[in-house]
Image 1 (tube, one colour):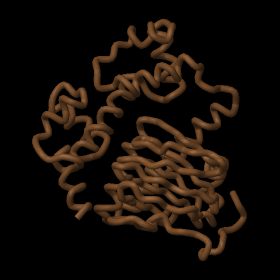
Image 2 (cartoon, helix red, strand yellow):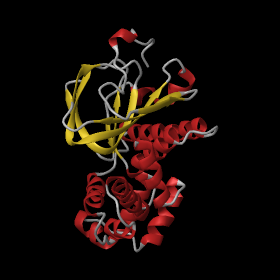
Image 3 (tube, rainbow, N blue to C red):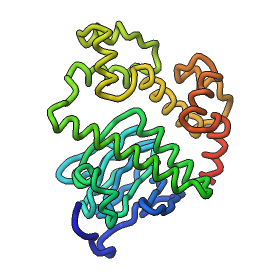
Length: 282
């Protein structure tokens, strides 16, 4: 990590230019849930802490380090400390959960230093779920919220770091496996058969299942359920009406199935999740 923070006068807080931003500080991280209006532009700026962010809804394009990142829903990305960049928000706006570690805590940041010192664009199904849970802690703070949010942040940073280290050590997923994951990301709302995906990428189904779990840390079924849950949670906050149609559109067998998955990953029912999200937005 860089040895010191830049002067604060040179840095822009993550909430700059947003409406309905919420944040809180734990012992180890600063957390923000920020909303950027549709079509807005954040002119070139820096931040006084490194950033690990997850796009929960909408998206924006980030110009940083001679690159352009398409920060779409479900993606995570890093912005190193003091790295100058600009953001161009999509027509949907952008709801972002931002994690900013305390740069003075070298013991905490040590395992994540390489990740946070470079620009990365990452995509894993669990990123959005964990970010939504952090947003819940921001909105419903109690005497355990800081502990819970810190643990979730550690999980996100650990997972992202492990993935990048694996690739840098020559253990990058084979192209056919990345193609299989892309197919899942595209077809998650449809009936997905292991044999069909395996045939499409040219491997045996057993080899696909085993290799997917080895590289991505979960089964194909678990990965698909998280993609469906991510979409369904976004729909709960975007529209009114019954929950059952959302569950069916997302690919769950029924509302009970959706409720079980929501309880498992978010700790609340879909109705409670929607109520909390509405209350936090007011």
